Image (tube, rainbow over all chains, first blue to last red):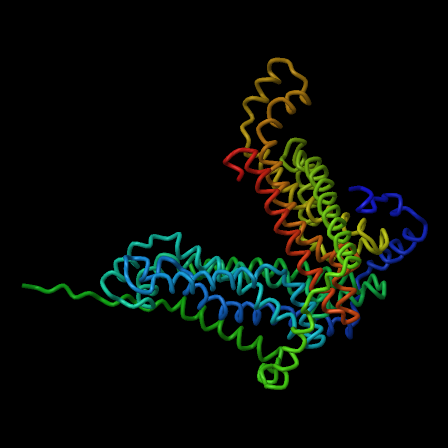
Length: 247
Length: 266
């Protein structure tokens, strides 16, 4: 295993690597604060936030219908013997497999592929987030809906109400808070993910950081790292606030 | 006879304002990014997308490329395992002060170190480590180790704080040296939990190790990045399938191992 991973701690201390790393780290202080770079940084930060928000919104649009289809608690055919049981099972299984495929490949791999197809820029990142997070949200929504008390929904369905009414009046009152708080938490993850996706060219802070690191510009890299840490803290605080508001 | 009139519930203004703000943020994001989704879904671009997808099939299964992908998969496995092991060792060392055993100053310092290690993502650590250790799997393993140390150290420390101190205190009062009291009492309580956390992080790290190659961390990621860069989509598809298989394999192995630890950790 050590051989496979090319485990060579002494590589850290060869003079060439030490010189490169030392020069880079020495450049970290002071962080680059020139107005031109700060303007670029502000634009990239806004782009990152917008990517995360747009990606999460699209993921929500993908996840809601799939979760609606896969939730067993809303299935009319499962209540008793009747026509359509097999067909409903097949549809549910197909939607479940689709959700699994969507979230099986990490968002950064999707981003890498979309950058090849759509070119550099935030569009690739937004689509990659939408696909992976759509799969995750859909699965978790269905799980949350099934883990709450499903008897009200079942009573409604048995009394002959439609599936949408059973969802709105039977399941949502019990689980809306949990659903909302999970969605906000995913948005927070999306902010972090959209920074990382920039490394493969999907725009935002990550792309800027990739460029600075390739040019060994320590000052720029340290400013970006500081902004990134601030952004993560901000997303954390905002997500806490939203969850309290929605509670 | 009086009838009870049910009042409709008062509208929740706080919810409405929050919902309106969220909607505004979503609209503003789409407007700011200015992605032309209509251009994305015209016949011409859909045809180009279809063509692009078709280029991924069939995956390249020539023996020499399969050998290359297998080597990449082994390298990814080694990177994830080595990174997780290094992180478990470092996390255990940092967890002792972080759980408040050596006073407040040591606790605050080690907590700050753990928070810092954790808040920088693996990919950023990898980009830094490629500069420090050169391109290759060793940089990837170091990057994984740095981030995972932050995560595991915090989880280990919380486990230590929540474990009952009575057995250890009893040993100390009976005259045992502090180190042996810790090893024979507290460590025995937290060890299964620590191992379960480490295995769980290994599952996450195998996914991460597969993509660290994008910035030069070796393994399957480097192969994928390389072949997509020179437009060899069929080879890229083989690598994607290998990634998928590797993740499924590690999930299975780690699940079996954790079940061996007892039903509480499965």
